[in-house]
Amino acid sequence: MIEERRIWVVLAVAALVMFFAGFKYADYRQSRLEEEKPAMEELLDSGQQESTGENKGEGEEPKVIYVHVTGAVENPGIFQLEEGARVFEVLEKARPTAEADTNQLNLAQILADQDKLIVPRIGEKLEQAAPAVSGGFITGGGSPTGGKVNINTAPVSELDARLPGIGPALAQRIVDYREQNGGFKSPEEITEVAGIGEKRYEQIKELITVR
Image (cartoon, rainbow, N blue to C red):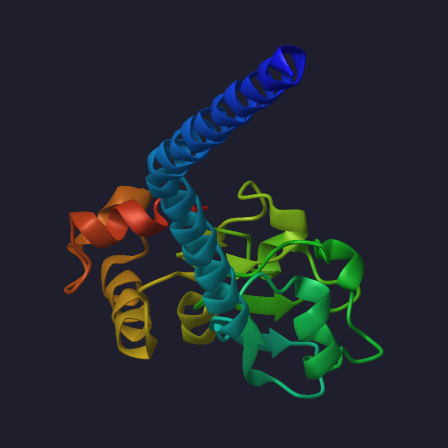
């Protein structure tokens, strides 16, 4: 009888120990969850922001650029392209003629907004084709060291087409000046033409010569 009572006491004590152990464990788990909750919320917020950012980027329309194409092409004019387009892509729209010498062009060159692409003809000398300059004209494989414009002989159309910032009116003034003064003695003398100051000269000085 005494032995049986001892067994029951041991079982009761064991049950109490297990009860309090379980209670303590539950309390410990609750405190851990409360500690981890802010970190989990921060992680979820970060994931949502990244997802939103990605979706926003996917929904944006590509930027466009406008490129002017002239020379030996069937469809000269201004073409709208996606930013990052290359020379060969605009030529697909402009359609070079049979006499076009596209070997002088860097077909893989990336175009920029406001570029002007002049496609040379077969047999046309480099000095007759527009050299490539930053933000303007593209030919000759993207090299800025091609033929320069001789401001003592170039007609109005060539001055207008090949020199950035020189429109038909300024080109005519250049021709008038050289006819009235017996030609230019140096490239710097072009600043004597009304409307061509130091700033504009800086844009074209690497593109002009006198001979």
